Picture 1 (cartoon, protein in one colour):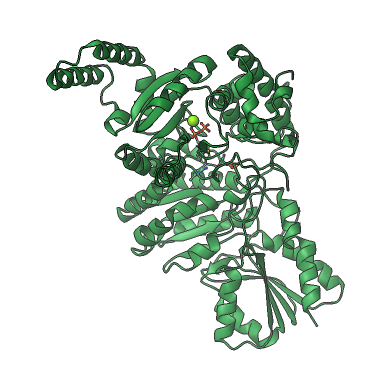
Picture 2 (cartoon, protein in one colour; picture 1 turned 90 degrees about the horizontal axis):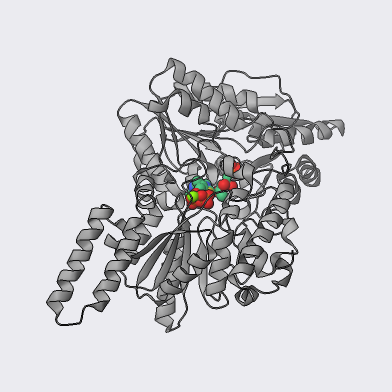
Length: 619
Ligand SMILES: Cc1ncc(C[n+]2csc(CCOP(=O)(O)OP(=O)(O)O)c2C)c(N)n1
Ligand SMILES: CC(=O)[C@@H](O)[C@H](O)COP(=O)(O)O
Ligand SMILES: [Mg+2]
């Protein structure tokens, strides 16, 4: 690691020759593969931006210039060369290096990202602030072709393009979102990729125009018109230029020499510029190049074989995938929708078996929700499979387009609760709070994989908006033996007791069961209830509990505020309950990255934590 060792501060990059930068990129590739093979993480995207990152640091000075990386999952090289190389083995671990940009981690991380398509808006805001303050520095947004499918990116292009603000947008086009990229914009980009002639052609015309003596405005105007006409002949509708950006590209995003030249040129251009770089996801590691989808976000793996080290367990996403296929075989109204997460949500098999009833809409959760509403209005049964954290994007669409009209859309909410290593931008700990307040919405959550199947079958039969939320991964080792029929607003009593009641939701039923067995062992008369429905609550059971329970504990893997515990508190207050109520939930803070086991322990949501809270609070 001869050159990597020389990089003690980012500006050391500037002392290297292009040849040395190429050698450094090889060392970085090796370092990255070695580390991520142990920690897991977003390998393929990072392998694709090594040269781009080095070129950026070679040309710009990020002590004063600003950079916003869209999604931020491709910032590992940025982190390694900005002083975090020695801690990089702690990537995504609790209290270690985050997998996303974090200004609290480094002054070189200028903006938090994690959710897609925010970079151009944030960068435009920073550029406007620079101008308002009379400062002089560059502001750069780096956005992938997948992230460019998100609505916010379009909104920002629309605003920036008409603004005349100096702003550099780098479009890193690797022809992939997590899966194959989708949509007409992606087709448009591939048209540009295959028409590089335009670029050379345009540059030649520009050179020619510069040589024309300034004999008058009219000649200049006709020459400009001529240039525009030619441009349309070669690539129909240069979208970015029509939107007000100066377009530079497409260029080879692995060629540091070309990259540095174009970046230097972009610095001198007035107004918004877009640089279109073509890169290969997974570049330089054969398994990642062949399977960029698997190596997008990968668990620890063997470098020699590309095989994952841990065996995959049965997961909620997989069960969801099986059940929706089973249902769709009998019911031709079933439609599956994803916002760029077909594999993560378990929809791959559905997409292959029923391509005409499957829609990947790109990174467009808002559109997905309203499009589902449109389908439902016309008699179909759409299921929008979405991660809890990304559904936050579509809050208004769930209210305004689905629930007001009481349309039978199923929101199949994966990755609810904590997801672990992705950290604060991705934890699914808000959904119970932001969904519970919406009228007409039924919300439920399974205690385990078997119950999940029963619940999904129940959901498919309903005719109103439903949100079913379930965690990342699979179950603990607990096996429950009761799967009574699912009935609207009815809970399941799992352990009978009298004095102390635990009301638990979803995966927390498993943790609570472990705690309850220990409590019983100490002679505590504890009752455990699986609160299958978060909305509506089982008021009959609650009324019965009010009569006989001195202590009620609620347990949920959601934030305390506005969640399931709050719903119970509201009800108990309305009934003038005199016993003690304790809510066990995530506190009012963003939950950091780390393994889910460490995080449950830290926040007292593991079986021991639940047990201790109960012991502490009973007389
Ligand atoms: C709002 C939102 N929805 C979904 C995702 C999940 N997601 C993370 S990266 C990604 C694909 C991004 O593709 P691209 O921007 O082209 O970057 P690449 O991975 O190809 O480098 C998706 C869908 C997200 N981060 N944010
Ligand atoms: C960066 C991003 O948003 C996704 O890649 C996310 O990390 C996927 O999470 P899962 O690994 O849970 O599918
Ligand atoms: Mg991409």
